[in-house]
Every structure is written in C-alpha cells, then in structure tokens.
Length: 114
Image (cartoon, rainbow, N blue to C red; front, side, top):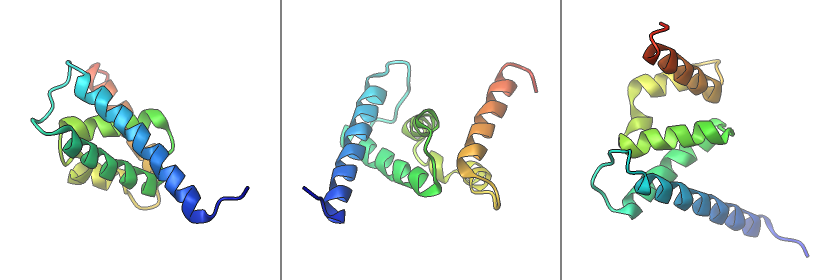
C-alpha cells in the first residue's frame, strides 16, 4: 500500500497538531506560568504559527522548539520581537544554533557569570 504525497502531508500535519495540542495543554496547566487570559484555541493557534515558523527556519531540536513555544505562550509576539528575530535570523548563521546560544547567554547572565 502506497500513500500519495497529499496523504503523507495530512498525516504529518495531524501528528504536528497532536504534538502542539499536547504542548498547549501542558503549558495551560502549568500553574507556575503567568499566561495571558485567552481561550485555549487561541493559544493553540499562536503556538502553531510559531511552530511553523521554527520548522521553516530549520529547527529540529525538541527542547529548543519547546523553549521557544513557552516563550511565545507567556509573551504573545515573542517570535516577532525584533531582538530575538534579528538574533536567530542573522545572515550566514544557523537559526537553531543562534537560539541555543541566546539561551546559554541568558542562563549565564542570570547566574551572574556575565
């Protein structure tokens, strides 16, 4: 049995949606987070848009994708923040590596190492 490209894409999109719903519910149920007062469906749509942006940039590491999604969840427009956007979309650099570097810098700064 062979699947056509459209069927494979539909399966892939369904898997992505299932993953994003899992993350959306995980975020929504995390009492440590201060989230905007919004419907879970709106949060899902924002996270899906952000996820698609990350995949288009070539992100593959689950931990980095989820860190970015958490950022978007607590701060709507996180992915459009000019500082973050300019950093990860820096010409001749790998976006995923740029974001990982940014998280390392922030962590060191928080620990007083920078």
